[in-house]
Length: 296
Image: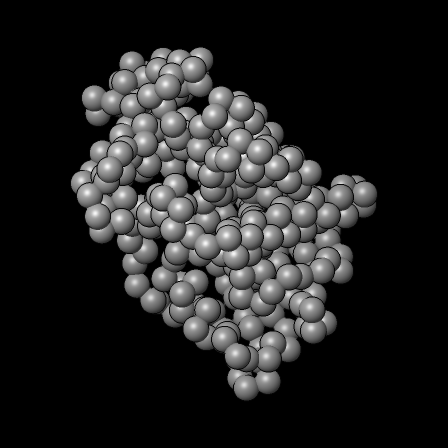
């Protein structure tokens, strides 16, 4: 990406919430990867007219325009599958915020469609671009895990919009899989008090070496967004995360990765490994949902 772009890919941003607004900001600023992208407009269900001089366009125009070659899908998780399918069928490349879909079967189907159409389908995982993850990756490399746990707390999310907690919290699952390899599900429970908007999902997982990992998501009004972890190795323990610095421009770093894919700068092996990890996490999330729902 150090060269001058021979061409620019026309981009439309679908959804202008927190992630969509950050995407628009990054596309409008003079970054190395932004030089390869030309922001055409944004799509929103709300009538907004324009944002920072970027025009609103209809979904129909975004799909039919030859000028639009790329869609950044930043809408609610429940709408991702439909948008991805429409833009791939219209011959556009797609970047989508995680989770790509709320089912493993749908994700597999969409990847096959992308391959059929010869288009890039990229699922954002900014949690893997965080300083905390870089620190953890260095800490666990070459170590023999005995047991571990990861607890995440936050305010509630609407399941209709963001999916079952195993999907809305898939970034935590992605951390565990990226650190310790493919995991198998041992058990999963969901405790809910709907009148209090309280939810606690407890998932027991196992590494390929049979080391236990517990992942807990706890949501309630007033609960602060917080991540607590504990990993025990044969050679020592890691309890909680030290302050490792501020996460800067993580969405821009993700945009850089996407542009490298557009330019064919990723090897087939790298793309296959990423696809395998994403599908494994979505499959696990689906199995967790099945386990929890069968017990309710």
